[in-house]
Each structure stands twice: as C-alpha cells, then as structure tokens.
Image 1: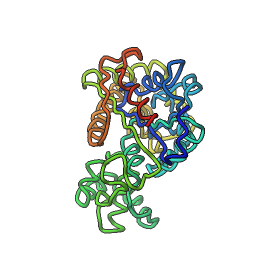
Image 2: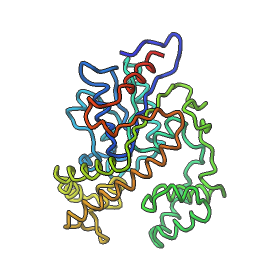
Image 3: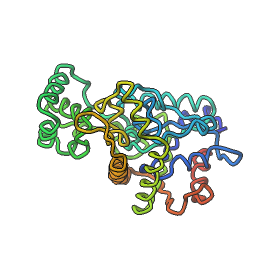
Image 4: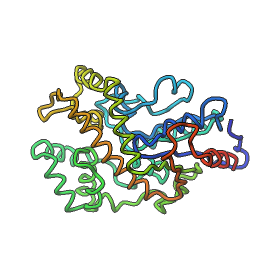
Length: 332
C-alpha cells in the first residue's frame, strides 16, 4: 500500500514505464508489482492504442488473463474494432483510472508504447479547436473520391511537421490535421500543448507527480525480440484470430484492423492473403519500423530515467536500480 499523503499533498504519484514494442515492458511490470517480492501494490493503465479493442488479443500482445488477475489492467478491451479511440479519449480514461487506483490506496502505473498517448497524458492535451462537422464531411468525401495520397500531399504543403508525424494509412489523424488547417488557417503543429515546457511537471497537470522510466535495448537485440515475438504470434494462431474477426464482419478499413499485425493480412481487394510466410515477414518488418519511430519519439521526452535491458531477458536479470527508483518515488 502506498503512503496516505492526502493531508500534506494533493499530488497523485504516477509511474510511467514505456519502451518500443517487444522491449519487455510486461515482464518488468510483472517483476516489480506481483508476488511476494512486489515493491508496491499497483494497477496498470495501458497506454497501447490497439489493446483497447476487443477480440484483438494475439496481434496486440495483450497481457494474459492470468497475469491480469494478479495485476489488474485498465483500458484493455473497452472498444469495438469499428470505434475510433482518440488521444483525448485516452487521456480522459487514464485520468479517471489513475484517480480511482490512487483512491484505492494503490500505485497507478501507466505503461505502453504509444508515445503520443504518453506525451499528452504527461503534458496535457493540445489546445487545438474542436471538430467541425462540415469540414470533416468534406474531407471524408475527398478521401473517398481522390484517395489518401492527395490529402497527404496537401498536408505536406500546409503542415509539413504534422505530415512527418502521421503515417499515410492513419486517415483519422490525417483528416484531423487538415480539418484544423482549413478551420483556422494554421497548421495543427502550431497549436500549443498544455504544459508545453516539455517537462513532466506541466502546469495544466497539477494533480500529478510523475516518474518516467524508459526501457532501452540495442537495435540488434530489439529486432531479434520483435522477430521472435512475431513468429510466436503466428504459432499461437494470429491468422485464425484475424480470419475470425473478418468472419464477424470487420474489414481492413475499421480503426482496429489498421493495426500492425492485422493490416498485413489484407490484399488490395480486402480479402485475406493465404501466404502466411509473407504476411509474417511483413508484420515483423512493419513492427521493426514502428519500433524505430517509437525510439525516436521517446528520445525527445525529458526527465526520463533510462533502463538498459539488453541483458535482461529474465526478471532476475533486470537492473536493480529500477526497483530503487520506484521505491524512492513512492516515499517522496
């Protein structure tokens, strides 16, 4: 149980543990917060943009039911695959989860690999204007008639910063960036972020104090882990999981099915590829590319305690000072 500090401070302590895909976040969480050696009674708030979707278990590497029975997780299996889950949705849900966890006398731990979620949770949401239904409808019509390439080209002209951050297949964020520009005449990237000093003590997040812990692995080690995990996903039945979702009526255009590990199964006509070896290769390749982008994003965060985990493939090999960091943070 974390100390009762309500009498001398209103701040909620929140640990953020993050790293690229397959870096070993789940193993570290299990080591730190379960069993007789647990350093605190904690609950996890998932910061993974695809684990929110029900039915997408293998391809998103959700923690198993057994672990979740010992270490409760929030923001997993809360959306249908056809629903869009935005960064604003995440911050609101994560705020409530952290408040609940702390009120139960436990330590909130936000963990995942979606850097955009983590950054906005720490610094606050961008002060961009609300959505405009007319502009959004017009953009959707242009997307359907002209394809994404034309909209990507427009965004590159009017907001190259946002264009560099948004994957061409991420049509939700692509339309949002263009919507903001057409509504305000200013690029989305020009809007300030609450607490935009870049430090995890942003003025608009006064209820929290944060401990940021990042997991580092050298590129070769990380890529080997990604390749191995991808192979294990296929052995566990990822192709059957995808086929089952398609049989339920989900398509490659649904928000959830655009995830790495799912999009690669689809051919251009929307049918499923039968060459599973090729699909596995594409999933591993796209996962490695995603990990590279994650590393770049995380490196821009400030006040991060970086934990080298190249030699930590079992819980017994984890750096000892990660436990010290969390213990000292709790007792502050």
